[in-house]
Length: 144
Image 1: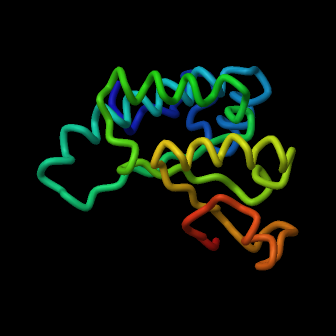
Image 2: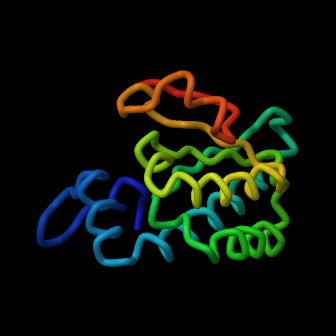
């Protein structure tokens, strides 16, 4: 199946990303999909790393992926694939970071300790302020 057909349903036609992600989250499939995407993205990025020294792989995270076993799963994938964590960046939305702030902050601090960068995607669309940034373990902000 070609990349252009990835989100094409025989019954519904094209399924927009926001609907696909919402359905994956509601069904609980987002965790396994996220693991598959991360592993395969790392495998593909490894093919380009040596020819592109500045290459960084950015992967979006759903709030549903930020569970207690996330760090173990992440570590397992990076080890199995042999991907350098310093070449990886996770993008999370502002609203994801704010939900269950304490728990998410602890998990994301562990992600930072692994050498992985974090960015907040669509910063400014939620309710946090610049003063909240000092409490977040992020390196980059992306606005909409």
